[in-house]
Image 1 (tube, rainbow, N blue to C red):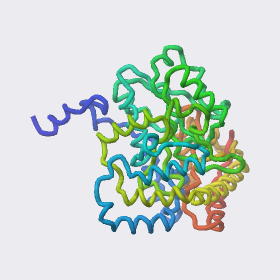
Image 2 (image 1 turned 180 degrees about the horizontal axis):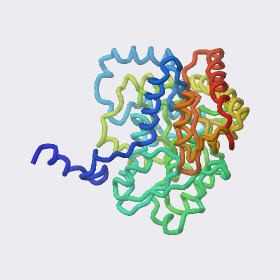
Image 3 (image 1 turned 90 degrees about the horizontal axis):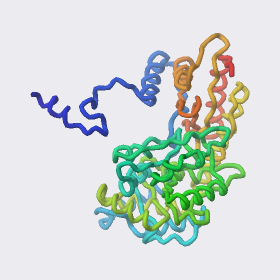
Image 4 (image 1 turned 60 degrees about the horizontal axis):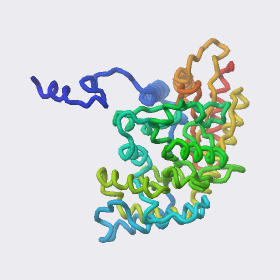
Length: 413
């Protein structure tokens, strides 16, 4: 038996077992990547406009970068950070009070850092899910929220986010048995990919639901600071009773243009935070202390996020105007940098779109515009306003080019 065949027999069932690596399924992000590469090769003189990128186009603030440089040179920052430095936790508590009005978080027991929000979302099921337990999450959504529950022989129940319900889940649609077996409820507002925001009334309903059914709430607040117009930043923890039932994961990635820096924090119920810290302690040794100290500067200066939000708001306004002119039912979101839009049925010259994936492939191949398809709860396309452009004039040029390209196709809705 060759080494390859021996290894092939050893893969865990959770990642495919003996069939791991043999499948020919191409996932949507890989399809988009391949389509983009092909479109660029076939049209070398036309710039591809990428509206599919789910990360900021700006660098981190200059002062944040300077702080990292200074702190990285200090001897005392060289070692393991384990569950984080206390100064970062203090800054996180102050940030939650200043930006979201969440008072009284104990930095010692109610806050812990995470190496980005993704590991936090992924680790928490290990603290709570036994075989047969249920995690409730929303769809469309971030798959990692459910992956580890399934790996632990739990079950994931998806609640669709529908336009008629303002892209909020219908918790009343769960059966009595599902509510009885559920341990975790994952939420994410402002939402990826819909851009929808939660209300205080909805969060109050979530708290009541969680208390009634003994379910722990995990709120992914990665976009919480990026809000527009008449909608102020809202934290789940600002709602009375929220800390009794769960936690919130705040990320610096989107709010402070720091995706690659990998910093977030878990805040809220001390038992849940402690459980996370215990699991985390068995997975990593903490983020580089110099990064944590640079992030303290960011948290102490939330005006960085406010400046970024104004840029996204401006770009949303322009893109929505263009899409509405072309016949799309586009509505500016109240938060995030995502615009979630129903796809057309076809073009007047006979190109049919069976689903969002068809439409996105068409956009790339025919117009060199990249977006992300979502067919989980209706056929929608997600545009991101994180395209690279320096200043308002260049932003307008990108938006005008989008309009020019899409105007060549007459869409039927």
